[in-house]
Image (cartoon, rainbow, N blue to C red; front, side, top):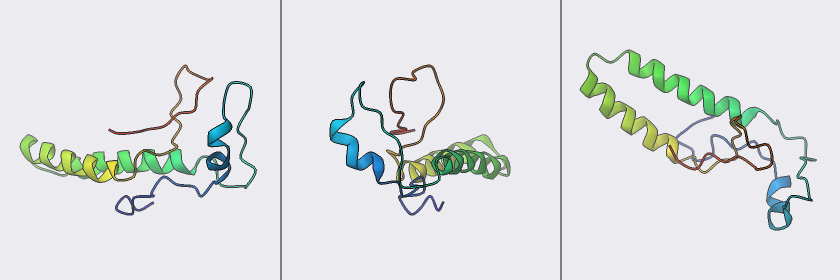
Length: 99
């Protein structure tokens, strides 16, 4: 997705939004609308990789640092997002809120 859009990691799923008020440990949230499940994760990782590739082309550390801060600010425009990054908390929904 376009990281300047503010919705680069949105797969269009409305199922979670409808259940937000009733989610707890006994109610499971399953997507029923058919939105692509892995799209937000793939777009998020592609955005991070592309930042790294662009930084690799810059000549010095100071320029890279300035560019990294600008890139992360742009990426933060799209957060919070419902992007699941695997780690050891299977009982909770994962959100990347800010980098």
